[in-house]
Length: 345
Image 1 (cartoon, rainbow, N blue to C red):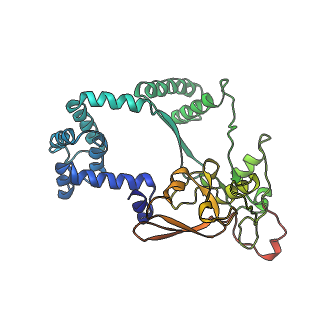
Image 2 (cartoon, helix red, strand yellow):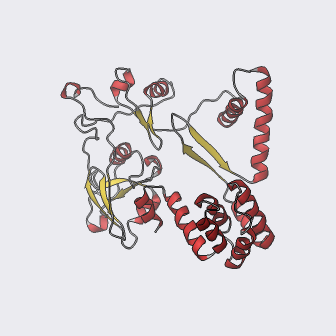
Image 3 (cartoon, rainbow, N blue to C red):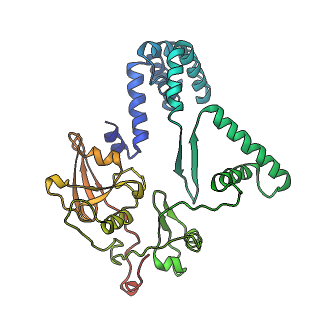
């Protein structure tokens, strides 16, 4: 159901899951919160604060929290509602709260979320005392720097200290992570100013690409494209396991998981058959594509199917009979014949 909603509303799996989860919780477990929503005292976002924090409690505890919140919803901001729900959950289910807290502390992780105009958000899901200590330490260092250097704001100093501490102990490190940037040769040389593509992020400006490429630590690979379509040229194989050359071509062509709405970089996805090997699907660039683990397994679920339409593209059919077409974006726009001789990198 989550996958159906994600495709129907053109939202991510996480957003679709939240919509489905909130709707089910309001109807089945939170009648007072639903009444406040229907009355207009709160909106769906505020209602989700109640459903999210009661998703893991029993129906009995959820009912107690819902009753507790009945007169604590109207004319309150989302943060205040969340704090009240958190208090109620601890009040009515102290043992369960402690057990869930222990499990969540074991789920600590770091995540990367790409933003607009060359920026990204690196965040950590950490125990509260650890996260608070890190932030306090960064703030102390930033204030000390700010006293000496007023050219940067406190937030800028804090972000710079954060990056330096992660990149190198001496505070002079540079990014050395392996990332994939796709840029045509004309843009790389400065003859064009077209955006390039960073896998998992999307378009990046030509000046940033040239800055990355000029770094002596950068490595280059050549990709030959069809100037008329912008797609990579044909390659194929007959055995089940994709050869390294075909895998490189597919990951370079697709850049991200090809399922609509999924943007997991191809480098962290699998090379998957659209028509499975068991159903005589060929191992070539027409029937193989980059697919994350979740969407690789999804097409094997009852009611889901996918058929290739060439060059890694496919038509997906969902259990309700809806169809969606996914096609890898070309690496560049079609070009006039006069530029045919200019290769792409």
